[in-house]
Length: 180
Image (cartoon, rainbow, N blue to C red):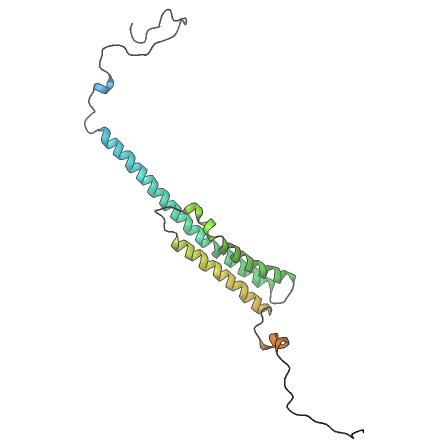
């Protein structure tokens, strides 16, 4: 049977049999062209895989630094909002101040979850984590400073007067006519 000819008697009129039953040499029997070897192709695949892994590690490191720098934007925004709220104690300024305290605290509690997608054996996350923690501590300090400017922190002696014992009497004075 010749290659590519229609197979008669198979029930289908236009069926073609592509199996090679001839004794002709196959393409695997030909030598590779000059400059090509199958071993080097496997090495190229491993090089490409290594390059992809390196590129992914570089991408993860870059994204980790971006995530670490994100609290800086929040710090600037919160500082502006606190400035706009003023120094008087009212509902708006107290709400902004407690928001400025709560956001860094919740961010510091979730440091591990924030950097979880960027974990890799080739990516060092110590620097980004330290920057993230430092910026959030700066935000916390900003909130505490605002509490102090509002007068809500007990930093003066007059804030603790109620817990002081009464002063001892130094003198006793009496006068008038004794009534017996």
